[in-house]
Each structure stands twice: as C-alpha cells, then as structure tokens.
Length: 279
Ligand code: KIV
Image 1 (spheres, rainbow, N blue to C red):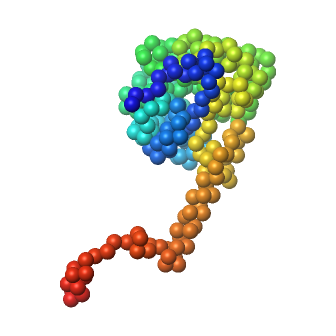
Image 2 (cartoon, rainbow, N blue to C red; image 1 turned 90 degrees about the vertical axis):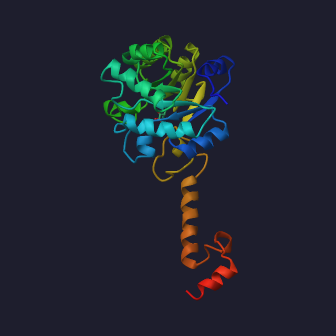
Image 3 (cartoon, rainbow, N blue to C red; image 1 turned 60 degrees about the vertical axis):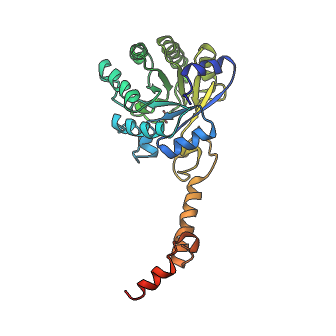
C-alpha cells in the first residue's frame, strides 16, 4: 500500500475536512498511531525532551532524527512521515540545509521535512521544494528559538507581530510549503492565517479554527503525567500511571511467587527428566 500524498492534505482543507497529526519517535508508537488512523506522523525534535531526556529541543542532532525517522518509517506504510530538521541543521548555510533535508528523505525514509521560521527561511523552503523535498513550515512559538523568546510565551499578540506572522505564512505558502504548523498563538490570529492560506494550517495551542491539530504523543497519552503539563495539550489517557501500576503488580507477583505460573513455563518430557535424575 502506498503512502498518502502531501497533495491530499490541501484537498482535505478544500473540502473542509479536518485531520490530526501526532508525533511518534519509534517503531511501536508509529505502528499504534497509524493503526488508529492518523494520516500524518511527525518525528518531531520534541524527541529531545520526551525520548532523550534533554530540557529542550536544542541538543537534538541530525543523526538522532535520522535514526528515529527510520524506525517510524519501518512501523508505518500509509501515513505521511514528516521529519523535523533539528537546530543548526538548516540555519548555517543553504547547501548544508538542502543536504540535511535530503538525508531525512534518503536515509530516514521520510516523506517530507519540517523546519521552523518565517521570512528568513523562505528562500531555503523554495530551494528545497525545487529539489523535490516537500516542506512543512512552522510559525509562532518555534521551540528551537525558545532562548531567543525568553521562554514559552504566546507569540503574535501585538498587531505588528501578528501581521508579520500572517505575511510569513503567506510567504511560506508561496515558496511551496505544503502545510504550516502554528504553535502557541492567539486563536483569532490562527483563524486569520487559516482563512488566508490554501495549504492547511496545523495548530498546537492555536485554537479550534486551524485545518488540523498536532499533539505530542507523550503529552496526549499522559506518559509524563507528573511533569509536562502544557495548556495546549489534552490528556486522552494516563499511560504513565497504567505502566507504573502494571510494573508494581509484576514486582509484587515476582516477590510473592505468583509469577511465573505453569502458563508461562515450559515442560520437559518425563523420560528426559527421568534420565536427568541420575545426573
Ligand atoms: O517537535 C515537535 O513535536 C513539534 C510539534 C510540537 C509541532 O514541532
């Protein structure tokens, strides 16, 4: 079965059909979210925080993303797999940026790449698209610039910042981006951007009027239920507690002798046993 085409997403928008994107970073999570029917999977650089234990996305490398993208691609056959370009993989110079984007398709097997930023990345997006690399844009609270923003603050709140964001979104679309993530911006601004574009907007903390939504796997499944409490994340399960409870039960059963039972053990032929009794 072939993968969904990026062009299908523009069609969904034109038909007013919303869709969900979710992050995945490995084979089992990718399998599960595709089986649940998600059409677009993002191998986000959020893997730095939720998989690798860093306190931001900044330390994530190209090799990290290639490695995790390969696993996600192996776990899927239908979804569009978008690989995030990590910090400093596209900022230093255009040739390196295109080569790195190419690596994510060639070595990682991704369908497309995502990169953060507005007008300053537009020439890069144009060049990548010309080279045959589908690009997803990312505006608003772009986590790779969190040090520049001085924390996780809502972006685009002033008329000037909002107007810049609208212009950046238009420029990204014009350069060939097939979709744009809008992160942590006021809902009315996200609605304006969405109305002005023909490519889908994918919101996270950007209100209900985007064409699509994205959530981080670990946040929506409550794996870090005691840590990453984000206003824009909704917990659909509390897997952290489910896992801890299952492991507690396992420990108790091992310590109490209830596990393993005959059901989890292997028998041996009587005559072999008899022979061994003389050993
Ligand atoms: O890395 C990531 O998970 C992302 C999403 C939050 C959009 O960029």
